[in-house]
Image (tube, rainbow, N blue to C red; front, side, top):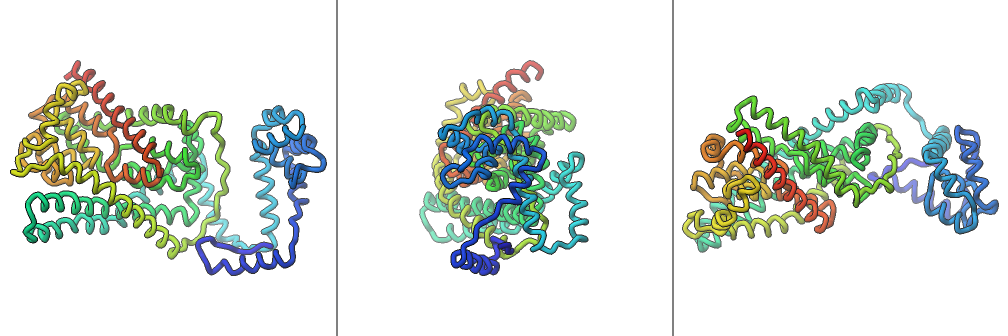
Length: 529
């Protein structure tokens, strides 16, 4: 029986239930004659005949000889091992001689399915011609990648537009609630804790959930209409060089906007290990917040042309970083022996089902908000404790004294204690870098409040230029750029991988890499500046 079914549309389930009841009441068996004819008359008919000769004539357990032959031609390892144990000879030699059998059997299966659908599905030829013309561009070697990058970048911008109202609301809530907390007359330390941790956490997590909502809605729409599979297809060969499949390109491109979206976008990747490897590589992509900070510092120290060259240097390091990271983590997560090609169906274009899309997006966003709040609150509370001072003097804080005491160590990595503390603050928020450095070098303001963006001096670039050398500035810029992403992105990674071990392992790798790059940059650039 052939019947229409849309998984996200419960209204279409009734026909399926009726077909199942009919199948139970009057069982019928599937005839594979047309499929076997395709196997025996296609371009690899000789290979199929050879596979059929290798399997027992009576089949194996409940499996027919024709089914076993097709699975053997596909290179199915469990079936090959079962046949070998049953006494079949020459199995391994056959698998080695026919590495692309799965492509052949896939073609035959799709041809068989199309034949079954031919008498059951009515297709509009005019609509197919228009979409067919676009698809020739969308999956072509010449234009496919350019179209995909353009659509993904437009998707990132659209996601930000969708997320903007939610993010603004999330950022406004703490500002509205903080005065109310102050008016309650609570002890100063308790007021500072509530405003500094609970309210800050509420604002950050609401903003994060807003961006996740925008990313899931827009890219869920692109996937819903059927285009996302084309992005995976055109980039599959490129991503294979990194041990990944084509589906990994979208999270990496989205990370130019925000690493949170990049981590959230990995959920379309079927393989768990490939999902983790994709996130590990996406972290190397500088996010939009990083590019809001880096040009300010680069221009202040190196001028317009020099600042542009610093940006070029960052992109060069980024590509090398991605390649090296793929080699390091790929050995465990994507061993060469276990890598396989991508065989996927390019679904037809169709209208989105808004109800199901909105429901899925809201559920995912709320789930992110709920889990992120606990993690971010804990980290915010810890950072508040390290930066709290009863009299408001930052020189009396634990973090300030800690920074001064470790300066002999931080100097080896090319950073003074002030820039090193700003480097640590970048783990909380990339936007915090300018604010924290402004507070530390001007000795005014709160270090903790600076991590939320407050306290950033409009002339911070000139303040830093008068306080540190160009070599230290360049090392600091490189360290901040390739440090771990913000706390929100770390939490998104934990949410998608469900593994604290892998999240911590990747984070430690990035911190170590950032410090090594910083040290190399400082000691090499000191020869010129």
